[in-house]
Length: 286
Image 1 (spheres, helix red, strand yellow):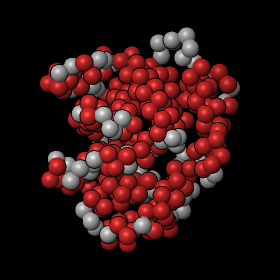
Image 2 (image 1 turned 135 degrees about the horizontal axis):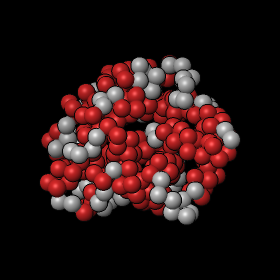
Image 3 (image 1 turned 90 degrees about the vertical axis):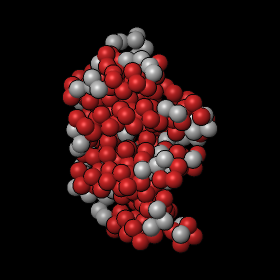
Image 4 (image 1 turned 30 degrees about the vertical axis):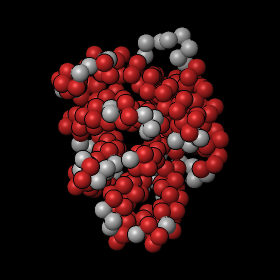
């Protein structure tokens, strides 16, 4: 289980574009457009290492806006997104710290955005289910970001059975998001659900068939431009089902694609790097 959960670290990096866009919209007025320009430069860069080195400074910038405890839900959610995204790029010890910070920010921001997202950890599961049914379109973004941060927290604490026991709550939140808007964030919510449904084989409670549906929808909603969707599809589903033909086809499609797409170039370059590594190990795995 730990090995499969570890693969969800890739998913946390998918929040990077959301994080940067969110930060830009929040602090753009303060910096007179600097944040917008910085976001665009990062999201459309092909240089992974330079971005990796630059992100900490941006992380400190957005954290600085929370020093006074401002009750701004969007600000907390943006800080959560960026801390969560960066946690997938650092060593495990730091990832634990950043994921905890991201989850704390997400809980604070989500609760400020909607009472239906407050104190969810403390509720019994039946009470939890009843409460998240109150999530409406006005709070869908807060619910989604809480689900993303919660996933990152669980991934970073994958050796903790209490943390793993929270997966059902994360899935329930994301299912509610998809019930409100199946295309949310150009299929990103579908991609997360695909990953969560394929952590385990069917014999141990996983739902790979449902996962496949989510992966296919994620690709369709992004019109194929979100290359990471195919990488996660190959890594999580095709490997689980020992389907080498599907695995290799998806990865070759990613490698052969043009990575340049508005606000997706960086993540697409990351996807191509991962695809090459996975394809090189294909014959050994299968």
